[in-house]
Length: 289
Ligand code: NAD
Image (cartoon, rainbow, N blue to C red; front, side, top):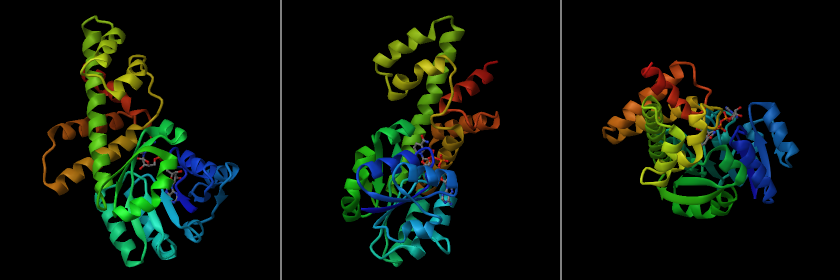
C-alpha cells in the first residue's frame, strides 16, 4: 500500500521502518528533518510537508505527541483533510482526547475521508518489535480494510467501538498503569523502611495475585533507581489529563485516578518530567523524607 506516515519520533520511527520492511511504500514527514531523513535511510521516502506525505496515500498514519499536533496536521490549511484523496483512511495512533478523535472523524467524513483512532500500548520495545497492542475506534469496515497494515506494527489488535472508543480504552489503560506504578513505589518504600529486602519481597509479589507486567518488567530497575525512559513522566501527565477529561465528559467520578494524576503532576513539578514513569517512586520517597 501507499502509506503516508506523519510523526517519526520514538514510536513512529520504528513503526514506519517496520511498514517499509513489510513491503509498503512509506512516505514520511516530521517537523524535524533529521527524523524524516532517518526514514529515508531505512528505505522509506521523505516528504517536506504534510501535503506531500498524504498526496498519493491510500492510508495515512499519524503518531504525534498530543491533540494540538493532531488537529494541526488534520485541519491545517495544507493539512490531511485538505490534501488527502477521497477514500483515504486516516489512522491516528497518537494518544489524544477521545473528543479530538471524534472531531477529526466527523470532519473527515465530510471530505470523504475515513478516520480511525488507534492508540497503542507496548512502548518503544513494542514499536521496534512490531508487537504493540492496538485499540481501534471507528467503523468496522474501515478497521477491516486496514487490519493487515496494523498487523505489521502490532499483535493484539482489537476494534473496541465507534470513533473515540480507542482513545477511551487507552485512557483506561493509562490510569491502570499509573496506579500500579504508584502502588509498586509504595510497596518498595514500605519494604525498605521496614528493613526488608525489596528485591526478594517484590519477587514474591510478582509470582502471586499482585503479579503484573509492570512488576515483571520494572521491579528490578525501580529497586535500583534506574529511571531512563521508556515512557516519560511528561507523556503520562498528558495521559492522566486525558483520563480526567474523559471521566468528566462521561459524568463519572474516578477518585483513585485523580490521586494518581496528582502524583504524576508532582513528579513533573519536581523536575522529573523526562524520566521514566516508574520515577513515581521518587515522589513517594520524597513524601516520606
Ligand atoms: P515523540 O515526541 O518521540 O514523537 C513525536 C514526533 O512528532 C516528533 O518526532 C515530533 O518532531 C513530531 N511532530 C510534532 N509535531 C508535528 C507536526 N505538526 N507535524 C509533523 N511532525 C510533528 O513521541 P512518541 O514517544 O513517539 O509518542 C507519540 C505518541 O504515542 C504520543 O501520543 C504518546 O503518548 C504515544 N505513546 C508513546 C509511547 C512511548 O512509550 N513512547 C507508548 C504508547 C503511546
